[in-house]
Length: 350
Image (cartoon, rainbow, N blue to C red; front, side):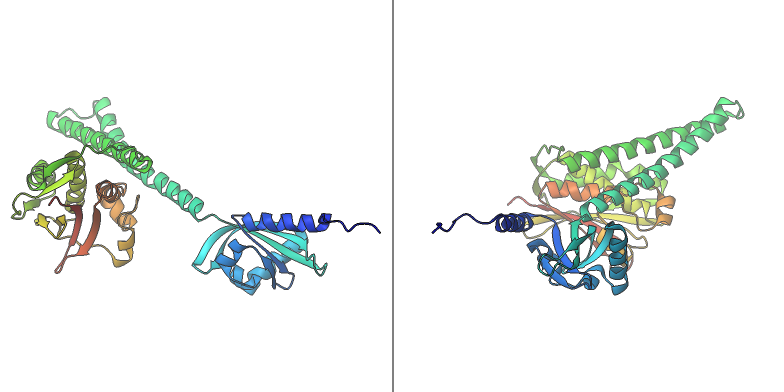
């Protein structure tokens, strides 16, 4: 009698290998009947979708019918779809292919779904960057082109008017320089290429010196800057240059959104374990719906404000990143009467 073989059959080997392949996959894999019933899925699909039917997975029976019809017609379908997951709707690249149920030998639909949320976010950020930077470049370049054109054609002979045109050119060149500096800072911050030169510093005089440097900017907007009576010396471990940059961004932002003949107030207070630097304005405040996006890059409360005030929406993101590099946090509060309070907290020295 022939000895019984201990080697697995080719069919069993293939099944085991396919099962291991599905188990180790990082994408969601599932097999559905043509009626839309779930037949089998890997662990990734189970974690994301549970045991959803095809209609539940795709969000509606109508969408499921369209996908099945397209697969029957073309053999496969490739689409970017917002699928219903346990965590809510998430964008996936979905490839649906006409298959066969190996158990019943009936036609089936295999689903391959790869989470593309990060890719879509990156594409959206790129689109926002192009849109914002294009606008921010167009405005000063238009002003420069107009002024240089008048000067070059000798249309303006009055010296005072010529000086005004030169001033327009200079101000817009500075504006372009600030935009480039912000973009470079964002790139360095994202790459972690910003090195902090940390020292034990008294933050109170640093705040006052920073505000003094910005007095001229505020006077041009008819907004006064006030440093509220500071606490005694408060020491923190920080890079003074980067703290000046963060505070300057907050103060400039506050001045930009303040009505004429109002004040921007800066304060330093010592809390338990940390120091808070606050900047309060008397502007219109931030719409509630926009608050969660305040410190995100390229964020503007609305396109009208962006056109009115200028700016690429990078200042608050830079503040958040710089303060985060110091182990601190940033925040926003609506002022009790009117206006906004932006602040950052830094760990204090004992």
